[in-house]
Length: 317
Image (cartoon, rainbow, N blue to C red; front, side, top):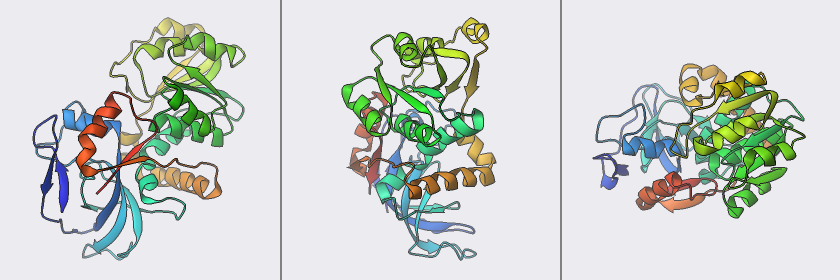
């Protein structure tokens, strides 16, 4: 098989490796598409809290077809199209995995491979970590990226009014196409813009960006508002002024879907089944990602970290 191998931190090399054999409880998947996520770049740079030993193959999210099964596995049968969260190993032509979900006919491989992480994070944040009620207003930062666009669609499916903040006209148009009711240029005064578009303040902040946007976004919350901390795509972890949390009975909520789903497999399956049902019903419509060959993974990761990507990217082995 071919795989992108991180042999030293900060670099990737395309290598020919032995195709793995599925062990007990595993299947062998021929990868049709691998989603590229911000965390993949952190692994390659050695900046993630989990540091796998070198060498390793990055890639946490794939879609493909089962081609062989382990000795005790009867389903899914060879020929079944599946998606999997694999943690590592996805940037390859083949991978073994134990936990699989059948791909619905409404999703092609590139969209399926870029679906789970972004959409599950959004629903986990807005249903499990806080409750976004119908007719509430949410401000989504980084709304033109893959995580932000998923949050736009999930928030609309929950009946909310969505204000989408993004840094370029192209990203703001993508957010509007995903269903955002209003868009905000992040080079403007976010606090003033969000308050003027929400009758004095928003109910929920969805923040995968951090950095300089965090403080004005927090101040845009109305009394009793909730601030969900998703990640730090800006590269800077902000320090929030806790007096602004105290003064209007606001709440700051951490969202770590990746760790949660590892320890709550039944709840995660229910979360994913909800999203797949919404997809079949047309409540959410995952956009087609940009596609690139494996050889361009390093460029794609650089684009992600420089926030040049609109939506998502999938690698096609």
